[in-house]
Length: 147
Ligand SMILES: CC(C)(COP(=O)(O)OP(=O)(O)OC[C@H]1O[C@@H](n2cnc3c(N)ncnc32)[C@H](O)[C@@H]1OP(=O)(O)O)[C@@H](O)C(=O)NCCC(=O)NCCS
Image 1: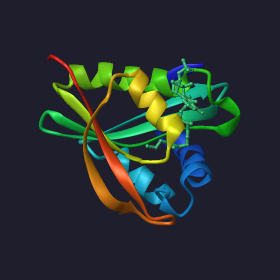
Image 2: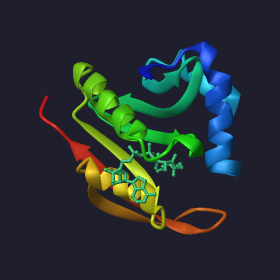
Image 3: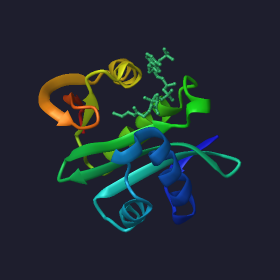
């Protein structure tokens, strides 16, 4: 398996995984395609024999990055793929001069919270009723590093 920057050939599979993992809140294939030419955006994919197993999407403004989504195919979870994607993303962001990564996570999303805890993200705030279907608070997590 390799981690690589998302290319046009990956987009359909990423969009499919988005739908599988996030349902009605998923990014459309069109929005994901537009990320390929957005100079603020960096998306990485985990690929094995042409199959996209997971991905992470981010946007950087000045020296601050937002992680918009991360997902791993349900059949491939618990193998360190999300960890590898985020570690590689942070490595690439450091080279771009970013100094922190911020994200929102559903308060009840234990696998994701476990992942971010393991990667030393700190809770910096709560957005009340941020999510719909079901309505739920978002925890705001951030990881900072020296540039
Ligand atoms: C969250 C998600 C991306 C994790 O992907 P993954 O590749 O399985 O994660 P990893 O294998 O790298 O796990 C890293 C750590 O996360 C934590 N973790 C992962 N799955 C977990 C689970 N089901 N329960 C509790 N902790 C979990 C563990 O601490 C794990 O470390 P360990 O294996 O040494 O115990 C995956 O579950 C997913 O795609 N979920 C649906 C989409 C989603 O919720 N994305 C996050 C939106 S904010």
